[in-house]
Structures are given as structure tokens and as C-alpha cells.
Amino acid sequence: MRTVRAFLLSLACLLTLACPTGFPFDWLPDGMLAAGSAIAQETGSQETQPKLRILAFGDSLTAGYGLSEAEGFTTQLSQALAKMGRPAEVINGGVSGDTTAGGLARIDWALADKPQIMVLELGANDMLRGLPPAAARANLQQIIAKAKAANTAILLVGMRAPANLGADYQHDFDAIYPDLAKAQNLPLYPFLLDGVAGDPSLNQADGIHPNAAGVAIIVKRLLPSLIKVMDQVQAADKSDAGGSKQGAG
Image (cartoon, rainbow, N blue to C red):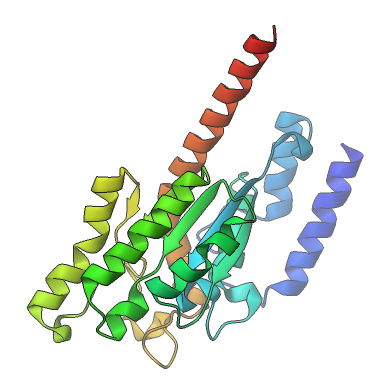
């Protein structure tokens, strides 16, 4: 317990140094040290809680374009999970400017880290470049197939096309994500920028990439969907472990 408290104190100090004053975490529970101490008291040790490895695989919205490391999506997501008592290793697999074709080209390398969960966020750059929705769909389908073959659970994160690209393009692009989720039996978070898109106060000067406050809203809204996937993965792990013990007996 003494070791756990020392670790939590050190972690709290590090986060205090890393996060600027006024960092947008008002919606989270009170300080990490208090939350972590409560968990340690209930479980006896933080070390008994295995961390899931989560790959955030996407483009600049995942990579944290225009933001400091502390403000980016993967850091805010990791900190939010820790504050909920659900610590996880969140891997930043975002590449600014990446299309679904770029993601497909590097997915094997990304899966080499053996993540248990992948948050798949790609397609925005296909849409911005006016690339064919059918090609984006095919690329995403192949990425999903590779992740499934690696026994990686997937949370599919959708994107939406603006009306100025034309009604036909908007319809075909927007259908990619719900169609894939249904066909592949995947959980879907329909629109990554829900509650953020179009709000100047939540976006950088380019009007496309969220600022730190916008990222905080994205994380808050996406968390329930991710937690469900985490619960399913951990339940499956426990079931597999129980089966192995019974078989060994």
C-alpha cells in the first residue's frame, strides 16, 4: 500500500506539471490522487488491475494536430480513463493527413503492439479530398479484417461529410460507418466531432481541428462507448482464464 501511495503521489505531481492551468477536465471526478487512493483502498493494490492496451488508430484528429502532447486526444483519453479507475495504455496511432489507404498500408505495423482494443478513426481526409466513398469503405473493411485476425476488439468511429460536397456524395460517405458496423457486428460511435464541429470556441483557427477544450468534449462523449468495449474484452479475458484453469484441473 505504501508503494501504491508513493506511485500515485508521483503521478499526480507529474500530471500537475504536464497540464496547464485551466485544462478542460471540469467534467471529470475530483483529483486523480483521491480517485486512485480510493481504488487502492478498495482493491488493496493498483497493481492487481491489469491495463488494457488501446490503439487509437487514425489521422490528425487522433494524432493531436496543433496541440501539445498534454492536450491531445490520446493523452486526454488516458487521463480520463485513469480518473474513472480504468487505467489503460493508450497508444497514439494517429498520422496527420492519413487516408484510409494510408491506414491500410500501416495497420500491420500498428497491430504489432498487440493492442486488445482499436479505436478506428479514419476517413476524414478521404472525404476532404473527395475520394470515392466506395474505396474508403473497402480500405476500412480490410483494416477491420486485419484487426479481427489479430484478435483486437474494435470501436468504429464515424465521420460525416458536409452538404457542400453534394447530396449524393454526402449520402454515400455518411453510410460507410453504420453499414460497416452492421455488416461487421461492431460497436459504432457515429460522429467523432459530435458537439464540437462548427463551434469556433472548440476548434483551432482552421475550423477543422478541435482545440484542447474540443478534445475534452470528444473524450467525454466517446468514453461510454469505449468503456462498453473494455468491459466486453475484460469479461472475455476472465472467461478464457476460467476455462484454462478448469482445463488444467
